[in-house]
Image (cartoon, rainbow, N blue to C red):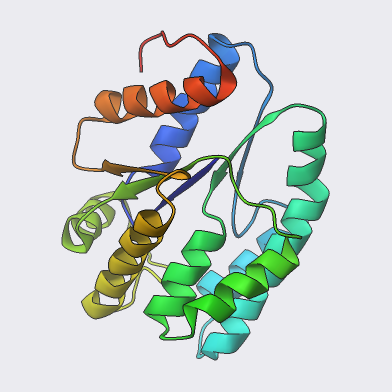
Amino acid sequence: MTFEGGDGSGKSTQSALLQQWLEGEQHREVVLSREPGGTDLGLELREIILHRRGYIAPRAEALIYAADRAHHIATKVRPAIERGAVVLQDLYLDSSVAYQGAGRVLDGGEVRRLSLWATENLLPDLTVLLDLDPEVGRARLDEARTRYDRLEAEEAAFHIRVRDAYLQLAAAEPDRFLVLSADRPVAEIAAAIRTRIATLLGAAVGGDA
């Protein structure tokens, strides 16, 4: 299961709450990860892609993300899935289509095909899109931090394109996506996610968010 959405949409909060419920109420092994940075190699690539000073060509940026994704899936995600764990991941290939495709104005289809090749066509069973107005997301970031990464620091038009791309991706694959307004209360969002994933797992819904 993957969490997608713009900056400040609450992906980390919701993934942590879901992990707590799955481990505590459902007694499932949970692997919590992220892209980029889900492995030791990924941490090095994350530092380059998000914090390196200076220009990175859009195609080079997309390839670095794909390299991180290929290693992450091969060494961490697939082994976890094969032993029966539930993988909860902050960002995946949809983020590349949105950020490097729409945001950087590359061909979204090419970016998607690159990620599918890198991951041997692995798609999530469920993708939660936490949809949020980019201006609201920026205000949340302003309250939480003083340093912005390369993508967070992009202009408003970039983030509007990213949001629009996410919504288009969700509309194209309604069976895989669960779209939730990130303006809703945290507990309400968590309950909606539990309900959806419980259907996939054949689990009973319960527990406080």
